[in-house]
Length: 301
Image (cartoon, rainbow, N blue to C red):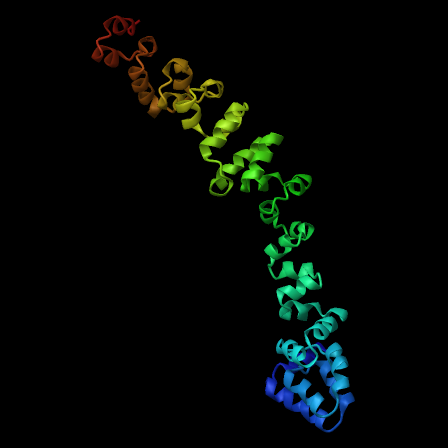
């Protein structure tokens, strides 16, 4: 059968119509139906020929057995049978591939063909008709949240998508889902929370570790003056950059850098006025230039 259908691909629609038309005209209806089942395409021209030659009663069987039905047959039948009868027929015989190609959105809704609507990408329509399970099935989580299905999203564990809306963010804060709240920084143009708002909320709820892991140095160091995690994790270079000289273990910092960068550490220590550290590491010239003669003398010991 498959090879037979492939051979029919070499016929033009006009040639296929001509072959079927001859069978109808000669009254060879069994041969006509057999050929339709084998892959000769049904068209409005052929359907009209059946009507004109008195074989209108053959149309339902021809439609059921056809493997090639052009899209415009739907409009033809809507004129001939009426829209309701036409659509009832295709739904009754579960011609879903054809339905997907031809039915308007309102008809798909009327017959509750939700999967077909999803396959057509009509997700807003599905949301408006409360088909949230279908939306979840097709992973349209943002639309679920957009339409206020916060309980549904929480029940399904889809917390990360709540960050897309203001109401969703408020629910995340209520539930203390801090990683997901942080995710809201990517959707600030939609959820009504500024990045600053989110950072403040996280900080006030003890999420310094999260902010530290996400490299929010400006917020933690410049704005909040929060150095504990940087000291604990020996982020000496970062602390130097923000001017927190007094919390730095300068010897440990020096041990972190490669040999060629040790001079940079000494220059930073000079700026921080860490004379004892410079003397310990025999930075004679730096101490002398700064007039620290006491420490310069000690640097030779």
